[in-house]
Image: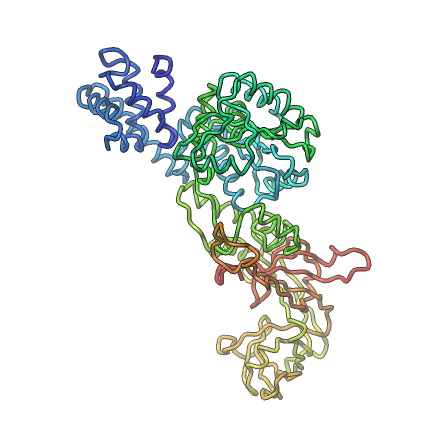
Length: 636
């Protein structure tokens, strides 16, 4: 290695092990016949590189194992014979501990994982506009937002990765921006990979001229087989002139010859990491106009090429990516090094996986296209819009995801904790209402000295423990409806509590009947509500206009906890994923609006999908309520 190659190494050796391993191998080779990296005594370069390695735990552990004998010899020699530089190490360790303590006190200790964050932080969120955001995207977006705006005073860039016109739509692009806003994420800059098509074209030309890329017309199946077996393409040794002609004339103009070719980066033929086996970096697409650039371009850069090149060009300092990209990290670094671009730090975090859920946009799109679900915002879908339509609140969503942190451990979670975190958010503020299903409504006649001769309305709190939620009018009358299930549990003469009113004795009930049509209650408001076993909900059927409602509940879309790659999705689709009951709600529910969240007494929490005023002229007006899981029973 030359001196100008050694000097930048100090800054580059703080990355994760996968990124620095090639640099360690280069250092080992450089030290075959050397005691020091530069010269014959301890100099500035040896000191800086040794300190950089000493500060990287993964690097130290690897070096100490001795796999790279020359590097291990040099490292141990410096450590044993130059105690004068140990003071710097102690100072760095002390500073790191102080930083950990300060961040821990601030409640964000995991933010320290970002390398050289004190030199500035610019993160990016890089979704492809080929579908709606799902909860996996939410983690990437929220972590990038957290590090940029909360942990550090940095910037967050939103870049729409629109390099495949066959999959992308303006609809998806707009939805992504809207969903981020709904999650409280405000990027400092919004750009598109398509903004840089000219720049990427120039970078590809440069790679071809410098011998780092070639045009290949090998058919797709053969190319895949050759990459798998580590066989070089017959086109790998094409001349620079031939490669340039194909790229700048044939592919650029979408000619017949151009359509047969793609451009591949010349990394390796048989690297054990198959991501490094000459990946495709440009391919033609003339079938679908680009939703932003129209038909200007006949070829488009691949993600693996565009991502590092534009990250560096845009000023991104830290690229947060899920662990599914870990094998591609050396590839990312290769493009940066080969094109001599500004360095970008990478941080991998585990994507969120949930049981009986898939996050593949291709599979989710298939559910939408085949009508298995109502759309991308279906409450059974794991999209941001889907879980929000189901009743997940934005504060709970943010809190849940940020609590996962940027861990690299891949786990498959149950939905229980996800929805339990939401319950904590909604329980203190959800107004209480009452619903009785129509098919199970039992007529009840109220008698006794306390029974009202005529219906009476009283102002009652909407929430028993939170006056801030407000009040509602409750109607009391001598005719009620109750649930059939409650009626079947009563015994003649039994004292029960009519919730929100008082006690009463059950009279004239035929418990032997398969369906109880009616019974009586002898009101006893002096009775002790603590002494009764049964507390039941009810609605006055006189003196108020009951509100018709649909009560919806949903189940998992698939029957298997974890789908494997070889599994056919259709074989595991749940045949019944939705149930609906028609019900009556109290009159106060008439004022509910779309997105309101309520609790139906003894039934659970519900989100209002449609209020009475959300229907078109001539349509039947009714409440549409979606049951919100609470975490107690998983999905239900």
